[in-house]
View (cartoon, rainbow, N blue to C red):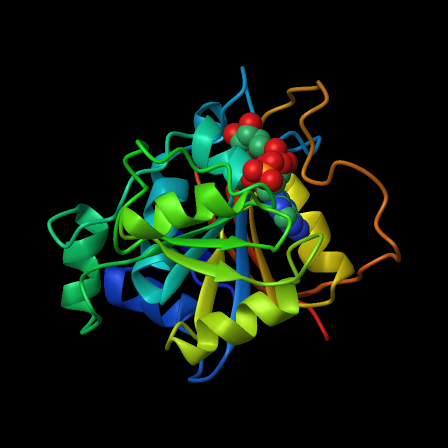
Length: 241
Ligand SMILES: NC(=O)c1ccc[n+]([C@@H]2O[C@H](COP(=O)([O-])OP(=O)(O)OC[C@H]3O[C@@H](n4cnc5c(N)ncnc54)[C@H](OP(=O)(O)O)[C@@H]3O)[C@@H](O)[C@H]2O)c1
């Protein structure tokens, strides 16, 4: 992987240089990571795997290693088969090597609290970000199973409040891994600080897009970094709040 911007460089980025390229300053942030095709598709046959590459998996793991918590919509958690990230995992070991707590909690966003109590994510240290409208019995069952249930909002999840609650728990640097519905809500709420978009050289078509519909207003992110490997582009865009 090599750096194209800022300052083009043909040198292969070693692991420590790549970590420096993605490390954030201390303090709160919401970073979003997605992989898309050239035409903005986010899945091939229903999952993102068909857009992946060794470089994308490397950046995906690094972003996880640098984050305090992963925030993900329940559609993505279910569709992509999310599971806990234990200290013994590749990400856990990378976190330890970077001097961070080896365990990485997953926070599932679900208006309906639709995380199944028997799901492998339905245990500590998983968090559920939901709202008053979710079935109280279901919320209680998930809490009994060890999930930290954050009730943020009444009829829908209040994302700014959810991020405040996560920060209160010490999860300041939040990595959002989508999906499209959660990204759209976060953009409309103006809470996204950074979009890291991996652009895979593929044309896919279909209806699974980065954003499911029109945003309330056009968002104009600013390109701050561009890396490349095997024709795959790794972008970092900053969003002005
Ligand atoms: N290429 C990539 O990088 C990438 C990344 C992520 C996902 N994906 C793909 O995207 C697809 C999933 O898309 P999606 O839009 O359904 O995913 P999603 O945003 O992960 O899930 C939608 C569900 O999450 C909950 N949710 C999301 N935003 C919410 C909000 N603001 N307030 C309350 N609840 C909220 C709701 O759950 P409840 O219905 O439980 O209330 C909603 O039905 C999958 O096929 C996945 O493979 C691709």
